Structures are given as structure tokens and as C-alpha cells.
Image (cartoon, rainbow, N blue to C red):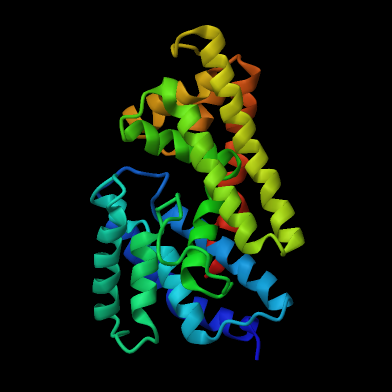
Length: 288
């Protein structure tokens, strides 16, 4: 038995229903940082993790994999209803409806799937799942794979969008992100630091996010204001203008910004963001 023999069958069965279910949930909500594309990236992260665990002799059976793909595609659907930290409860309700619609009520340990979805956004990791040493536990897999999407240049954009939408002033943004980011990376290392190549790959992405927000914090301290149109502060203000206010997708916004900026930092950031978001690895159609 190994995970890989079941992984393709589970994806073939559930990718389209779950992606479209998630897509419908966000059909009237402009939140590209957490819409169906975010959920797809979390699933891709989960597949990568499952393969790494498989190489270490840790196998997930078909019911386990079914719960993982459901969790990854539905965990943030509650953000189509509320942006606050209670969105996990709303996601749980949406998942219950999905389970009823697709007659999955006999899925083994269903309560663990629902509990993991509800609790996944507690980035202080203060819940009944914290400290579990089981790498196959649904909460560990979901939380870490969700956290990995907060790394890299994509993570910078996602933090900026959701924190600004939650009303956090720009002057406090970097400090709050760096604390949250540290909690995420510590949990990642605690849970899967033994997967050397996997851990090293994503630590490089973490370093990009940490460096950006460290630069942002220093720029705000030096400028003594948040009105800058260059460097990391310029990136944040442009995300606010084009993605939040003008409701563009991050790729649309990035292309327009690149055409009109003369700032090298901004240009480099948004070119990198396009590269990440348009990677064939995260292209839904290539998985069909």
C-alpha cells in the first residue's frame, strides 16, 4: 500500500466538484487572496507533502486523502461570508452542506475533518490538535499546507489584501504579519522539519516574505509616514489601490503596475508575483 496509488483516483473524483463548489462560494465576493485559486494552491501543497510523506513510509489511504482534498478546497470558503476569524465556523457549515449533497456522511472520522476546518485559522495553534505527533492528522496537513501559501511573493500579496480588508492600518501591518509569519513557520518546522528537501524549499519562500515585511517595517520607520510610492510601501499601496479598491485580480493589477512604474523594487516584486501565480504547477486546467 502507498499513498500515490490512491492519490490520482481521489483527485480524479473530487477535483472538479470541489473546485467548482469553492468557485461558486466566491462568485459574488471579490477576495482573490482566498478564493478558489488559493484553495487550489493549498491542494497542490498537500499533494507535495503527501508524496514526501510517502517517501518516508507514511501512507494515507483513500478515505484519508478524500478528507484532505475536501479540507483543502473548503477550509476558507467561509471567507465569502465573513472576513474575521470566525470564518472557520462558516467554512464548517459549507463543508457540511457539501458532505450532505454528495452523500459522504459515512466518511470515517468525519468530525475530525469538520473540526480541522473550523480551527485551521488559529495561528497561535492553541487548540486540541496542537502538539499531535501524527503527520497524517488532517489538522496538521491542512494547517501547514495553508500556511505554505502565506510564504513567497504570493504570501506578501495575500497578507496585504486580507489585513487591509480587516482594517489594520498600514503602519501596524509589518509587525503583525511578522508575528503571524513566525508562528506559521515554527509550526511548519515542528510538524514537518524532518522532510529535509520539502522543508528547505519552503523555508526559502518564507525568507522572501519575512524579508519583504522587514523592509516594509524599516521603510515606515525611516519615512515616518505610510504615503510612499516606492519600495515595499509602494507595493502595499498599489495592492490597496488596484486589487482592493479597483477590484482587479492580482495578475491584472501586476501587469498594469509594471507598465506604469519606474521603481525597480515595485517592478521586480510584481514580475515575481506574476511568475508565482501563473506557474503551470498551479494551473487548474493542467490537473484535469
